[in-house]
Image (cartoon, rainbow, N blue to C red; front, side, top):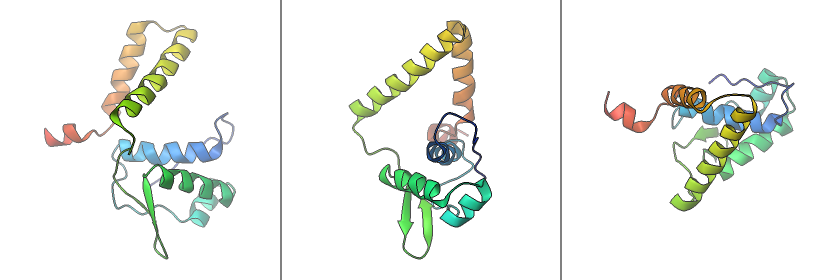
Amino acid sequence: MILRIDPRAAEPLYEQVVFAVKNAVAKGTAKAGDRLPSVRELARDLAINPNTVVRAYELLEREGVIVRRQGAGCFLTGHHSHLSTHERRKQLHDLLARAVTEAFHLGFQAADIEKVMAACLEEVSFPERKEHS
């Protein structure tokens, strides 16, 4: 799994690592059971502080995205959020509302936003798409 971050971005580095791991799973380039690089390996590869990787891995573990196995490393679980459907829908609404608001302020129309959203959905490897293939 190749992860990329942007040290110049406003988003904290640990959040970029978390998103990169989640993105790899969503796009199907990483799957349940895959081993993540060790903290030292990833810190070296990304040229960041190992504590940043530890923070990212701790967040991924709290969210149930990864599991740590003593002496073996961190592995992707393949599990989704443990939150209730209501809470997940609320978070989804909040995320999309923020994205739409930002797109509006960038000067995009609804049709433009819908096209980009459709393209983003196509990039994700949803389980129901795999079943119909």
